[in-house]
Image 1: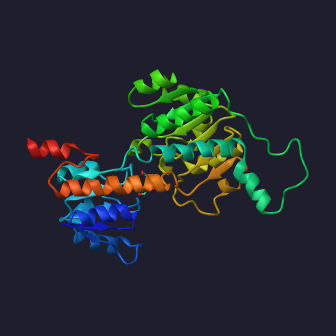
Image 2: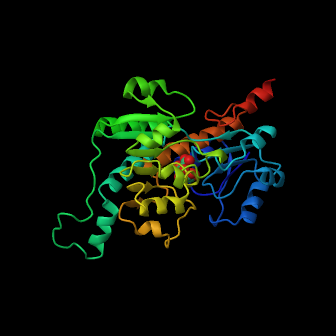
Image 3: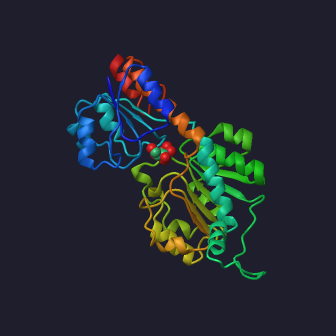
Length: 328
Ligand code: 8YV
């Protein structure tokens, strides 16, 4: 069975695939055009898919009828039309848990960086502007005992809430599709409505799965309901926020600061004026970029392909419906 791996992943994953007797196809040039990518996908049975540049939609599945399984090298699957994959009995695997710690670390890092204007101050140092002590310039804020609002309290959201609780004794409020009993019990987290979340959070951190109905949910009318000292953190998907509105809300002092590991669009233009603001920190989507998380992702993604190749269920599958369809 052939596996197309569109970008090199940690060797441990490639070795697992080869050891399982699978034929691994890696492109010579990893920056494929859509047409080149389709050509590779037409000629493979399975894909170990890195990145979210190309959509797995009806057009894709029509163009590549030989595809039998997809193992994403990500926990997010917003670039896959899952319904279409179910119609075609194509299991789509993902990589949960192994990146929760790393991604929540970045959310926590952004919170601190924004609260203390770290990127702005680092930039000043690099530019030779370490001026005389000024008691009033670019002051940060302390977040001890304040309220952390989590939008989407799943595995990554839980880790962020736990860090906020343990490090800064923050009160945790959250809005989610379902109640998270573990977070309520262990962290004293309180389920609130969306409006209560945005109105009460001193730090609002987005950790939900991105779906089309979330598109630019965080827009000007949401930001203006937030506290003027609030910090907005997004490490989930750039599509959650309207970036022009975020910029305007920051300029209008509707909120205090923003930390983004994901931008809208992605990558962010270096000319985006939001990059000029002192209480903004932007990172280039590095949530899962640790050796530990990326190795874990490689193992889970390869494990999903190997299970499929043996006729077994993928251990981490976004659309397990495909299996009940097979057995019914
Ligand atoms: C990846 C991610 O860096 O897992 C996710 O959903 O966003 C990141 O971990 C990226 O998607 C690479 O495939």
